[in-house]
Image (spheres, rainbow, N blue to C red):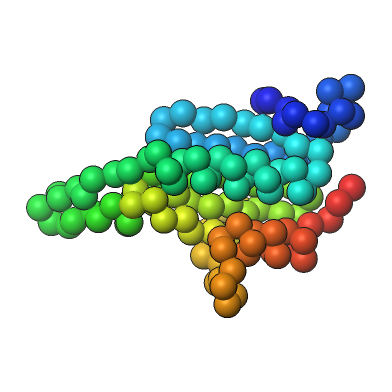
Amino acid sequence: DRTLAGSRSAARGSRVSWRVTVRIGPEVEKLRAETAEEALDAVELNARAASNTERRDTVDMRVRRYEAGDQVAGRVELNGPGVAVGVDVRGDGGIQAWTGRWRRRPLELEDGETPFEALRRVVQSTSVEP
Protein backbone atom coordinates (compact mmCIF):
# COMPACT_ATOMS: atom_id res chain seq x y z
CA ASP A 1 0.00 0.00 0.00
CA ARG A 2 1.18 3.46 -0.85
CA THR A 3 0.30 6.47 1.30
CA LEU A 4 -0.84 9.50 -0.66
CA ALA A 5 1.43 12.54 -0.60
CA GLY A 6 0.48 15.10 1.99
CA SER A 7 -0.52 12.60 4.67
CA ARG A 8 1.96 13.74 7.29
CA SER A 9 0.53 11.75 10.17
CA ALA A 10 0.22 8.65 7.94
CA ALA A 11 3.96 8.81 7.38
CA ARG A 12 4.48 8.94 11.16
CA GLY A 13 2.61 5.66 11.58
CA SER A 14 -0.87 6.75 12.61
CA ARG A 15 -3.88 4.72 11.54
CA VAL A 16 -5.04 5.59 8.02
CA SER A 17 -8.74 4.99 7.58
CA TRP A 18 -9.39 5.63 3.85
CA ARG A 19 -8.33 3.08 1.22
CA VAL A 20 -8.40 3.59 -2.55
CA THR A 21 -7.99 0.55 -4.80
CA VAL A 22 -7.25 1.19 -8.47
CA ARG A 23 -7.80 -1.68 -10.91
CA ILE A 24 -6.85 -1.09 -14.53
CA GLY A 25 -6.79 -4.31 -16.51
CA PRO A 26 -4.73 -6.83 -14.55
CA GLU A 27 -2.87 -4.17 -12.53
CA VAL A 28 -3.95 -3.31 -8.98
CA GLU A 29 -2.65 -0.39 -6.95
CA LYS A 30 -3.66 0.23 -3.34
CA LEU A 31 -3.45 3.71 -1.85
CA ARG A 32 -4.15 5.07 1.62
CA ALA A 33 -5.43 8.50 2.56
CA GLU A 34 -5.88 10.22 5.87
CA THR A 35 -9.02 12.18 4.93
CA ALA A 36 -12.10 11.54 2.83
CA GLU A 37 -11.31 14.59 0.70
CA GLU A 38 -7.82 13.32 -0.11
CA ALA A 39 -9.22 9.88 -0.96
CA LEU A 40 -11.95 11.34 -3.20
CA ASP A 41 -9.33 13.41 -5.02
CA ALA A 42 -7.33 10.22 -5.65
CA VAL A 43 -10.43 8.43 -6.97
CA GLU A 44 -11.15 11.26 -9.39
CA LEU A 45 -7.54 11.60 -10.56
CA ASN A 46 -7.12 7.87 -11.24
CA ALA A 47 -10.53 7.43 -12.87
CA ARG A 48 -10.06 10.43 -15.16
CA ALA A 49 -6.62 9.15 -16.19
CA ALA A 50 -8.08 5.72 -17.00
CA SER A 51 -11.01 7.20 -18.93
CA ASN A 52 -8.55 9.09 -21.12
CA THR A 53 -6.33 6.10 -21.86
CA GLU A 54 -8.28 2.84 -21.49
CA ARG A 55 -10.46 1.72 -24.40
CA ARG A 56 -12.02 -1.61 -25.28
CA ASP A 57 -13.21 -2.95 -28.61
CA THR A 58 -16.58 -4.58 -29.11
CA VAL A 59 -16.43 -8.30 -28.31
CA ASP A 60 -18.66 -10.61 -30.37
CA MET A 61 -19.16 -14.01 -28.71
CA ARG A 62 -21.61 -15.24 -31.38
CA VAL A 63 -24.31 -15.66 -28.76
CA ARG A 64 -23.85 -12.21 -27.24
CA ARG A 65 -22.17 -8.98 -28.28
CA TYR A 66 -20.44 -6.81 -25.67
CA GLU A 67 -20.17 -3.18 -26.74
CA ALA A 68 -17.31 -1.05 -25.41
CA GLY A 69 -19.68 0.80 -23.08
CA ASP A 70 -20.84 -2.50 -21.55
CA GLN A 71 -17.31 -3.50 -20.54
CA VAL A 72 -15.46 -2.30 -17.45
CA ALA A 73 -11.94 -1.24 -18.42
CA GLY A 74 -11.03 -0.06 -14.93
CA ARG A 75 -12.43 0.33 -11.45
CA VAL A 76 -11.49 2.71 -8.65
CA GLU A 77 -12.88 1.84 -5.22
CA LEU A 78 -12.97 3.88 -2.03
CA ASN A 79 -13.47 2.25 1.37
CA GLY A 80 -13.55 4.12 4.64
CA PRO A 81 -15.49 4.44 7.88
CA GLY A 82 -19.04 3.45 6.92
CA VAL A 83 -18.40 3.99 3.20
CA ALA A 84 -17.95 1.70 0.19
CA VAL A 85 -18.20 3.57 -3.12
CA GLY A 86 -16.37 3.75 -6.42
CA VAL A 87 -16.46 4.32 -10.14
CA ASP A 88 -16.27 2.00 -13.12
CA VAL A 89 -14.45 3.26 -16.19
CA ARG A 90 -16.21 1.81 -19.22
CA GLY A 91 -14.51 0.64 -22.39
CA ASP A 92 -15.81 3.69 -24.26
CA GLY A 93 -14.36 6.09 -21.66
CA GLY A 94 -17.63 6.62 -19.79
CA ILE A 95 -17.67 6.70 -16.00
CA GLN A 96 -20.35 5.17 -13.77
CA ALA A 97 -20.40 5.92 -10.02
CA TRP A 98 -21.69 3.23 -7.67
CA THR A 99 -22.14 2.40 -4.02
CA GLY A 100 -22.12 -0.85 -2.09
CA ARG A 101 -19.52 -3.15 -0.62
CA TRP A 102 -20.74 -6.50 -1.98
CA ARG A 103 -23.52 -5.52 -4.35
CA ARG A 104 -22.83 -2.46 -6.45
CA ARG A 105 -25.74 -0.10 -7.07
CA PRO A 106 -25.36 2.70 -9.64
CA LEU A 107 -25.63 6.20 -8.21
CA GLU A 108 -28.33 8.42 -9.64
CA LEU A 109 -26.85 11.72 -10.76
CA GLU A 110 -28.67 14.89 -9.80
CA ASP A 111 -29.13 17.70 -12.36
CA GLY A 112 -25.76 18.57 -13.90
CA GLU A 113 -23.86 16.45 -11.39
CA THR A 114 -20.73 14.52 -12.42
CA PRO A 115 -20.08 10.98 -11.16
CA PHE A 116 -17.36 12.41 -8.91
CA GLU A 117 -19.69 15.01 -7.40
CA ALA A 118 -22.19 12.20 -6.73
CA LEU A 119 -19.47 10.24 -4.89
CA ARG A 120 -18.61 13.29 -2.79
CA ARG A 121 -22.30 13.78 -1.94
CA VAL A 122 -22.69 10.18 -0.82
CA VAL A 123 -19.43 10.08 1.15
CA GLN A 124 -20.19 13.34 2.95
CA SER A 125 -23.66 12.11 3.89
CA THR A 126 -22.66 8.62 5.09
CA SER A 127 -19.08 8.65 6.34
CA VAL A 128 -18.25 8.32 9.98
CA GLU A 129 -14.92 10.11 10.43
CA PRO A 130 -12.83 8.69 13.29
